[in-house]
Image 1 (cartoon, rainbow, N blue to C red):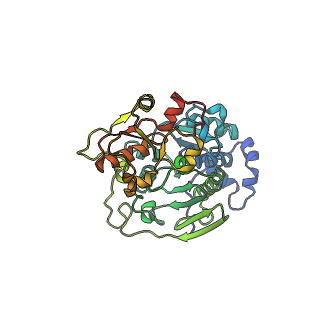
Image 2: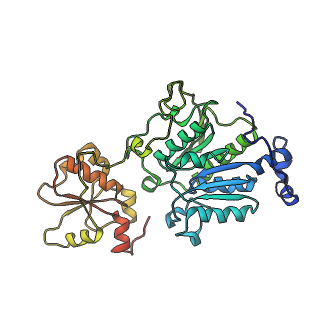
Image 3: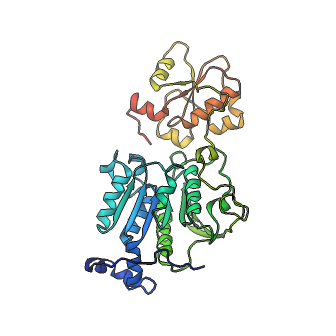
Length: 392
């Protein structure tokens, strides 16, 4: 299917801009008129990370006049193997600030609008409304559903991408023209069943493959050229170096874009997607210890059992001496409870405390009474106790 251009009226190009974009102007489907439309276009990129990095750079190089970037995070050393818009000099800097500087190095004619916030139900509609389309480079399910619903309610297309380990997916969701994200993924996966890139890892160069396609789709939509990925889901396997195109269709029963929608305003997307290890209404605060308290307990005459719920790959990077590996999946299945002592205190840790919080709560629900979560996980341990090991 082809669509009308999202940008109806362009902005006149200067002499310098005409020269800069000459190779675009030579393209029959772009031309000067198309390049002027790009100059007048407004694109919002949600996330200045792995997917946002190539998308931001290529949209800027292509001459998209105004690029908004949403991200509340700061640059971390572990970002740099895939988030090519940032560098060592940017560590600790807000990602939006680093991204703005990189975009201006690529193209000083582009206006960058920084949104130094976490996108949520209170601000999404107001932010998204100011743009022609959204490029979704987020890495978590609550924000993906939030972006989708905001775009549906506002009638805007959004170009979505997803990556994990060696696999990527990309599509264009546009209610009224094809399916929205909820049509194809009506329910989020069970909490914790899909690891984040921080837990499962990601091949850095995969970001370039998926992010560049997102940029291409955005430009096609802005100009109304070619056949956008509306109604098609591209699936990429980097190890086999294959691309598969799957046909996806709008769901008439979709709760947000269907014939009788039940989602007519933005909801609490963290609650909708579920929070691993979250307390139920009748449960109290989760027992916890700091890493320094953990060290003191481990040095006592009768030390607790320290359990590491991370995967083998993570433990190979850094570990706490004496910790017993019992993967979080074994807590979820119940297998772990046969390995925990009933007459000895148990401390549970992971990378930053989220997965261990879930394991701790599951152990408490299984009847173990002297169990506590290690706040901050091994990253806190590395920073406060043993900085000789690498962070990740």
